[in-house]
Length: 579
Image (cartoon, rainbow, N blue to C red):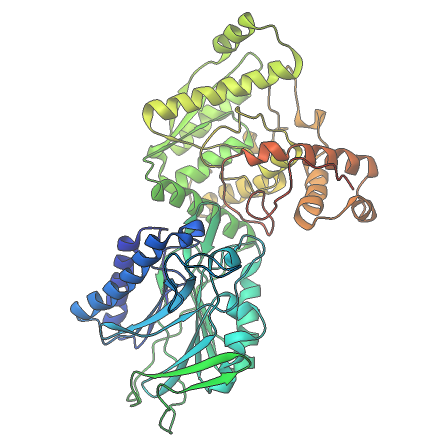
């Protein structure tokens, strides 16, 4: 299983990744290599799937990859790879009523000896959460089964495993002894156990071993965590790959060779799915000593969230060709965590922190920010924003909330100016609690290009900071985040003596309510029945709903929860429903 990190649209680079991993697999003696869903194009491709030129380029890339593998002496090793195909017979500009133009398909091809032994398309097209595949693809209706060294191997794609019926349900009827599933399954907290349980159940249903190969890497708001795995026909775990890093997971399986000759090219129906059979090789392999089964150690919950945020930030910077990042460093917990994530992602030498004290900044805010710069070795500079704020206030008479927001907007303007001048990507430092309640200044602290902790509640921000410091201690290193940034009461410091609790309840109370409202869509009565204070429920529903227009203008950030702001939660801005 080649757990790789492709880039959307980089067909040439992605094909190079495939060739490199096939070469490594061949050198290790592998008999079959499987890559994730849509490896050649990257995933998800969104509306690129509707461009005929992009579909054509993907098909041409698959053909060229097969030829290249053969030319480089790797053609004898069968390679299952995901790519963007087109329904056979479909014209590039043609369309059927209710189907995507050009009939693109999320497909798998098995490449061998310079050609595709078969191509097959995903049957179940997810259309929930972050997925819009009915918009982009037309479904397939085939289960390809290939005899390889006397073993019958079936192939399916991602959602086909998650839904009842379809190709996976036909595996038992096909008599296959191994099911290989290509996946582009994004990370969510607690999803790894769900995957293992699903794979075990499907393996038992199919009566076949199951290999689940997943993508790794960041793509805009999605993070793919790898966690590729193999279970045997009883559902017992055989091997498992690491999280959040590329890997080639080599596993030997002992499977029964078929004694009877196959019906090559023959097709059979099973619950609306056509089982197509293909031959690569009939002769079983001679017995050999198997490799030890690799099982990567598991990560605890907070560690995996931190790893997801680091990977997402690294790939957003790298894949969008930014050389460095810049952020405002206030001495508070949010900016301290974002600076630490950025330093871990791309190296402290590429992280630029700007301290922007105003007349309301406390002494400890400046000293805590300076201490973080010293501990981590990031680039730090101080630019006082007081004179800039004074210039605005001398031009236009303002007070109250407008004056508070002006400070945030001056800071946002300064960061964007430095970004334009020096070529940095601006990282915003807002958390999910602030975004939910609308405590984010539009064109101020929301200004930027990427938001690493956008999907992290404030309580999780503290957990992540404490975990990162404890991890440093375990490794004999200096904790990167000053303790005072973690323990002091949070404040935006936009007016004298301001604290977050002046406007919001304690974050454990607030986050529990917000998670129920945002994460599970409980209505007012349900929230009160769940134990939340009725007056607070009314207030927070009003605040959350009124802030939808702000969230629409917030930068992208990595999805780590089951329901994030952005791809998951899509509510109208103009909306009078409040219960």
